[in-house]
Length: 100
Image (cartoon, rainbow, N blue to C red):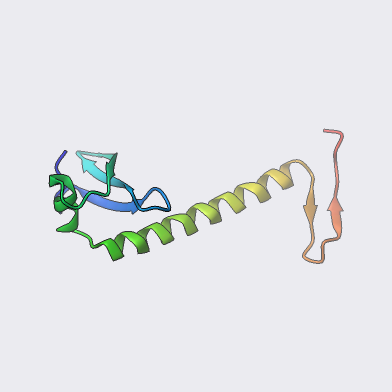
């Protein structure tokens, strides 16, 4: 797979060791995920580094995880509301419906 400025959407590291990268590429109207090793000597690694730096990848990874966490927290709150387990800011129980 070739990575170019025309088909590049975004990229971030997949693991804490920064050994794998997920690159999102545009193919027509679709966005295709492409998982690659963080091997900057490989052809595809060199292609990616013409578009983003490793520092950009670190920043993208931070932003990606921050957005994922925010989404997760929203989902937890929605589930708690749906299940009738909602707390006020002071921690007082407002609703409790465990018999559902």
